Image 1 (cartoon, helix red, strand yellow):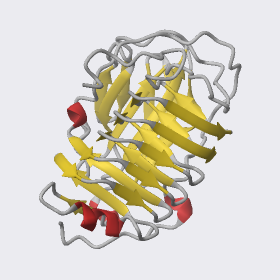
Image 2 (cartoon, rainbow, N blue to C red):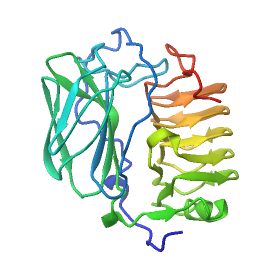
Image 3 (cartoon, rainbow, N blue to C red):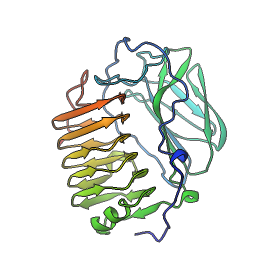
Amino acid sequence: MSTTKRGTPSLGAWTILTALAASGCAGEPAPQHGAEPVEDDHLASVTTLVAIINPVVNMGHATTVPFAQGSERDGIPVDANPGSATTSKAGLAPLTTGVGAVELHIGNGLLGHSVLVEGSAYDAAIAYNGGSASYFEDAYIHYPVGKTWNPVVFEPSDAIAEVQAELGVDSAIVVLREGTYAGDLTISGSNTLLIADPLADNAVVIDGSVTVTGEVVHLRGLTITGDLVANGPRFGLSLSTVKGQTLVQGDQHVFLRNVLCGPTDMAVSSSTVLDNYGLDPIPTPPMGACD
């Protein structure tokens, strides 16, 4: 395990899932798309943004859909000085950004993007209609994983018990390096982040089940071979794959761009549910994703 000390941000500093701009009608048709992994992320060394353009609105989504929601996903230029990218057919554009007030250009649309600390990572679900762009409510997510935040970093050679011990403490920021971590994992701490480095090709695998009992817990970029059970409020799952069952209760959750392979029981309310395979209207996971 890295000797980096645990960061202690306040609750309002990060996993609060900030709604910057969201309005419109939830009745617009959901675009279909193919699956592609995020190609790179450079976590903890470069300030990054993963833009997810015109995500599918899944059944169970209860927050607003911006008026700018459209169907176009492939080949949209995204620029966030100094980084730029073009969206894949899955609507994904991972790119580096500057620090401070950043102008985020989505095709012909323009959004503000404020980066407080170098090394931060962001996911942003964005509606775009060819002329204007808007953030989805509760799906503009900040991950404070840069050196300034002093995350605790684990390697696959570290025991899963060490990871679990760290995640039993409130306000933990935990990074898992590429590889497989064998064993079940329980996350009992609140205001807690568990994130994969890198995101590319689902490179971080938890070979077991994950149970979340803490409040305000967010997982990003993981492959979980067993079940995922989350009982605390304001749980988040982004850019991840769950090969077993997904059982979630509570409210104000965020599910963004995941693959849910097994049976899914989401007794949730007031939640944001976007771009998830295994949930209507895209109930069938992409070929090979659940092998």
